[in-house]
Image (cartoon, rainbow, N blue to C red; front, side, top):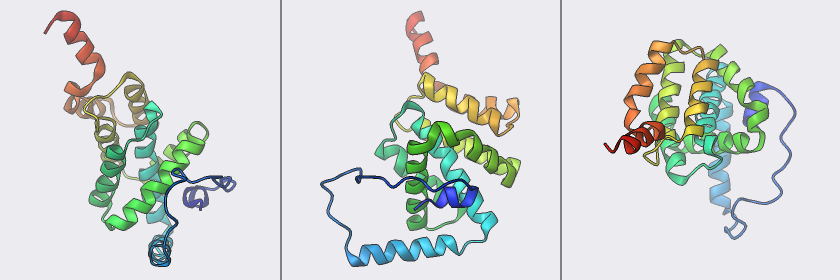
Length: 190
């Protein structure tokens, strides 16, 4: 399934040759029916709402994947934040985040700018700032924002045209989690 590619255009993603966990049990008929029902609900969303939701999930997944690892804690935080910020059900958030995670892993360097630009086009400044906040929260899920994560957060903010003062406000909210701040304090012996 290529929900993001269908929304934003482009060729379908190549099929994933093996599941992430090859030892996982196959889905039961009930689980498959549930997933299909959720996907149908997502597909029933107005196209603009679906684009906004998919774009937000992708941009946040991009922040989570900045260190080339998306942890279970980051995934759970993305799902919770998406449900809280957009009003979709928790089950819908799980599906959207999983699709966005896979797209970010498979096509990250190719799609990052394109999807972020599309999200910028369909979102309000307040929604873009909310997604930036979610990106910072996800990057700090392990209680530290590494230099590669910080660089991606800076890039996302620039691509979303976040005002420098707004970016500084959000960054200051996470100052204690920035690895460069911790390294500077350690060097000073504080």
